[in-house]
Image (cartoon, rainbow, N blue to C red; front, side, top):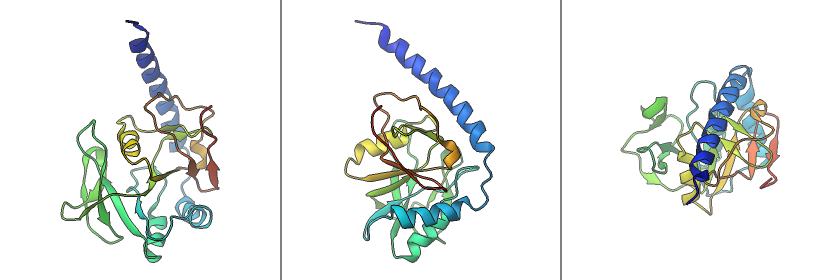
Length: 197
């Protein structure tokens, strides 16, 4: 049995850690003014969810791009919305129904999530947060693997990354279990990813 697999895993983990350091610094330098409103306009114009889709988003943490203007606009159009609930490490996300104005509770790692009384649902159109992305659809997350496991468990769902345009990298380090995105929406436009590179 080869010892190269553990070595490759360690090397990939180190590459991702360095990419996260760079991505966090780059994102911290971005001026967020008006980006949430611009993102909302671009998604609604260029890649809106179909009527009747259950749309999953996320409550922005810290310097993440603000998806709340988009959520307000989708809700005003009658779109059903949900937010993720973070489970124990190693599990895919779960989702609970949510609408603007509904109370949120505190989840792990600074997340906000719907209260336990909100009904659980299964999204078929997801807005996915990220730290960095590239033109091949590779996405760098925070390291928990929650969205990779979730997207793998929802093979028919549409997943669109959302980020600032400045979060694009030339190449994001990725392994075989890292799910790729078809598109990433930013405040300047929609990047159509070209698949494996």
